Length: 351
Image (cartoon, rainbow, N blue to C red; front, side, top):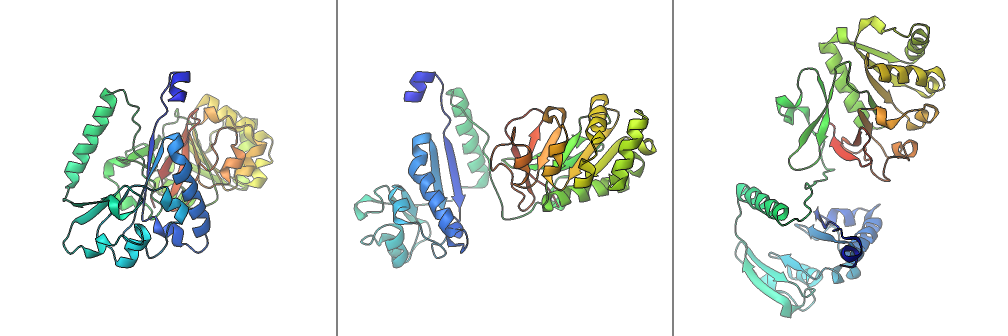
């Protein structure tokens, strides 16, 4: 309320839902760190309009600390064992252990104390009704001048398979880069047209390998359009372009350059790439394994149609316009930036 009165603006509220949260806490290497971060989020988040919902089918793998539970006043549970009742609710509250029928549940907003129990029965809610209710709530938010952002789902448990994608996601003349995380999933594609903007992909991990394999498959279908240059071929391409500004290898219209540390030391590389970008006479796709190689090149991020960072190391080379901890590189997940965008979006690269 103080922020609104002083600024005249509304801070958005965020709802974070973590399903099977006990897996985080039960991890031998990351459990303590996850516990600390989760506790901090629960304790301080409310002050900033951040609300947290934790859900689990079992508490066997990991338990919240007492400080975390004390900040979770509202608790809902179906049938539990007596031991789980004592851990999840309180030592004198064993009501959920007496449930014998499907759907029996208890709602408790008194930090699990027995006097806060409210018994109810969970009803089955079909998926289409869920979607209808969500749409009604979103419409209500817009009509009520409430700031409504698109819901976002972060999934790190599985890679996206190309076979799972609708055929229309990969149209002729387009490169399917991935599927933006969210509800619903949206295709992220880049045009292969020569006059479209260049594409820069940076990172060391498996995500870049997925993209490279996709480019190879497209190249097999349209070999006359592509030239793929690596190692010494990159340096030869640079020298030929310096000697003849109109030089185009094999008269193709899509050039993919894989730049190494050694290539990046060629001071003329930046000049040649800059000229190609400005003239838009080729569709230029640049792949690099190590983001630090780009430090020696005068790249202007606003010139690129797409910038995709596929591991956390990438942020060091793009510190001016990449948010900290914005890239992932796990299970086909990467951060991408559209032209001039300061905020990244997440995209899952299909295998």
